[in-house]
Amino acid sequence: MLSTVEKVLFLKSIDLFSQIPGEDLTQIALVSTEESHEPGDEIFAEGEPGDALYLVLDGKVRVHKHDRVIAELGERECFGEMAILDSTSRSATITAITDVNLLKISREDFQEILNEKPEIAVGIIKVLTRRLRHATR
Image 1 (cartoon, rainbow, N blue to C red):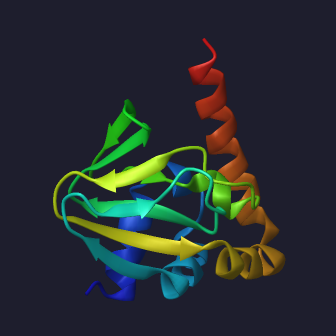
Image 2 (image 1 turned 90 degrees about the horizontal axis):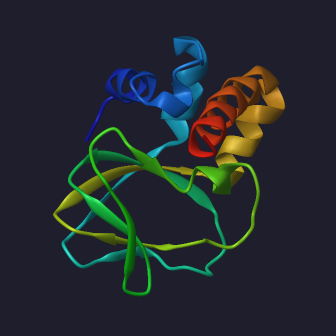
């Protein structure tokens, strides 16, 4: 189980949260929860409502649509990031490849923080915009 300080340091190392000051990350760390999954566990399925962002503490997950693998993600990578901004359904299924430990941030908790600190959204939007520009090159 990670302490709040360890969670803040971990969040700061994630690209998505890199533009957010440490004191604001403390609020996010306080609402985050840890989850563990075994190989083969489905973390969420394509089409399910998006309700949380996940960050990989350690281990690996597979992002896939049916039998087509889209990506494999490991330590310090995240998935489900669009779910913290809107509630559309999941665009892919995520399955644990190895034993995996995750940090989960629910959209509901995250939205409450954004209501108090809208500048956090600006930092995340900058990172997502940069990713989108890179992906379309």
